[in-house]
Every structure is written in structure tokens, then in C-alpha cells.
Length: 166
Image (cartoon, rainbow, N blue to C red; front, side):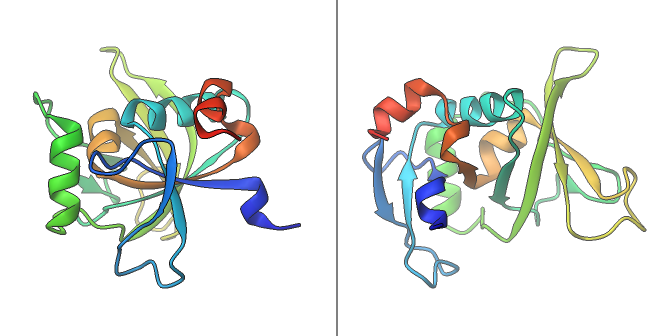
């Protein structure tokens, strides 16, 4: 079995054509892997659809931000009127945002105020983690600091599979 046949690596960069693959110019892309470029809203739909269907999703992004608090069990950034597509691209190109860690997205939910949070498993152990190796990632953090998603193609929404011609 070839993993490339079963899994898709997804990114969202506004300076690249959507629903096409390209080699990500990234200091950590030593193998010159190709990534599917999709819209940011499609990235969230991928995660929400995959989790609803019982699939988990690999998440690569930035965990060196002040809002990433592993010991406290959360990753968040203050609510703002971000221009996410533009700000994400600028942050990535200037290395304000890096893909410095991978976590495992396992669930999604909302808090008492209706704010969406993702539930992720971290590999850093359980000993100093409020939620025993898991943490909650607020939707704004996901939208701003996600670099790559890794997901089984069978978990993709049908509408996205059509856009990607899979």
C-alpha cells in the first residue's frame, strides 16, 4: 500500500492556485513533498467532516506562540477581525508562523459561549499537562496557525474531492 494513494497533505496559502498541488518551499520539507492547496474554509470543513465520520486528522503548525499553553491545556489567540488569508500568508513567509510540531486532531466541540474548540493529542507526555497529553485549540488559533493537515482521502468531503479531482 502506498500512503500517498490513501492520504492527502493539505495547506492553505492565498498566493497559490487552489485545488492544485505544489511543492511547499519550507525548510522542513526535505523530501520536496507536494501539498494540495485548498481554501481555509475547506480546511476547517475537512477537519469537521473527518471527525464527524470517525477519522482523526494530523495537524502541523506553530506551537511556539504565546497563545499555545500546553501545560494549561489550550491554544488560543484573542478574538479579532483578522484577515486570515492575508495574515496567515504574511506570517508564514516571515516565519512568524512555522510548522514546528505535529499534533493529532481527535474531536471538535463548542464551549458554553458557542465558541468552537478542537481537541488534540500531543506527544509531549502527560506529566505536566492539565488534560493528560491533550489540549483544546480555539478556532482562531486553528485558522491562524495551522500550516498542514494530513488526512485519509476517504475522510474528505465529497465537494472537496470533486474540486481536487480525486
